[in-house]
Length: 319
Image 1 (cartoon, rainbow, N blue to C red):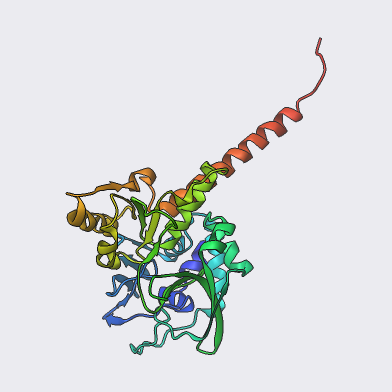
Image 2: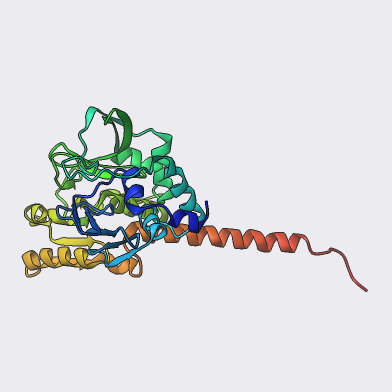
């Protein structure tokens, strides 16, 4: 598949093939709950005449290639075209009956929570730069049936017995929706690192393990995952027990507003750090991790190329 062929696919059909359905229609515009995050109000618009999308929270939009780039967190066009092509057989015209039929709020039938072991899910995590061994310790695997079809996804537990679930094509929640609070054993910790989503939390653990493989010191602080910036209010009370709060939020307006809400509550009594400066220039901590991974790969290839060039040089003396 080439770029022009991909652009012929209707965005509403492509989104439908991934499990996303519109919640309302206004003339030529279809409104969705964003496929990039959890939200209660639809902020993702598709213009059916221009075949263009726009996410009002992100402040970004574009064609199907740009959409896939955000969904798969990569700018590699050949990879994106391959993923889009895989969905083509499933991209059928959408029936717009705006009832509660969205896969963003699925009915989880025959639900099983098992240890994370699916090769496809582990491969997806590795593509995102996540250490699979760490993911196996922190996450489970959800297996369920929806509309007669069997699905599986990474499942990250929250405080109330629910799970944030995610696979290559879908992210959602097995109710109840709640924050995740990872407390260390022993003496209460004075510091808590706070993340928007569990991918950022796993990214932090991966980065820490890379920088300190012998002594990563994961247990030096507690961790909290909001599982949506909408959950900030639920995090305020448990955060009150910490002297230092480090916020690893997205570099966007929603992330900044979440940080300001925590600062408004506690800035006079606690040290609150905006850790997003570490990955400035990137959307979030996982994008930063993936960029580091890509840079490292490029460096390795450059060294190999240099070594190959040196090995091909003629040996011996020239008179």
